[in-house]
Image: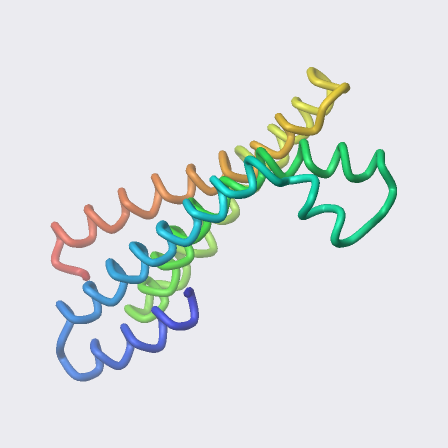
Length: 155
């Protein structure tokens, strides 16, 4: 979605139709959230089956299923911030994508993965939640930046 939003929004911005560029982002977010929600809900019930596609090792299947039940929620939040990143890039603000990703990695993904590995050594489920937590932080940053830049007339 990032590349799609970036290309379509850039064309609309170049055509002096910024409202269509914003609609492209909004519709893409709706598609990403819809798909992410369906995938996340389905995989709550069959995570081990999904992992079993890649291995027959029962311990990997069990632990991978635990991890996937937490991680899969990232399908929703990553889809949202990918759409924002594509939009910001189309508007000439790719630095925003870099900054929110660095903040997400250093403030959420890495520290939460480390902390959950220490606090919950018997399960990988909490560690799987570190990724969606990082993406949720990115979404919060992106929405905030979008609102501020819209108010200032930069988007």
